[in-house]
Image 1 (cartoon, rainbow, N blue to C red):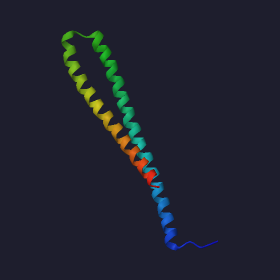
Image 2: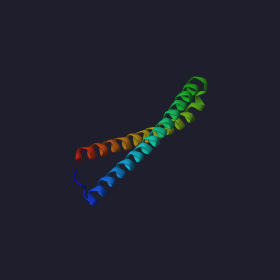
Image 3: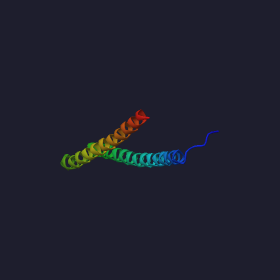
Image 4: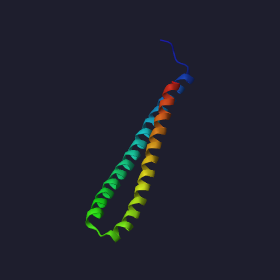
Length: 102
């Protein structure tokens, strides 16, 4: 069996280490994204329940103020969701491109 050159041994070991670090970073990123997505869904559900309450159980004067607050929160939710999806899409594209290079 032919002996490997010391440089190739180092290269193979380094590539494996980089691969494991990439896997670990990828898992951490997914956990962070999952956590953020869960928080966004909880916020969405809370706002949905509050909207139902406001719509059917409050006076008209109160509705305008609460509607403004709700609109502000909905805009923030939309921004956060788009940010989360853009990050996911960026990561997916980067992974796809790195796989294509191999």
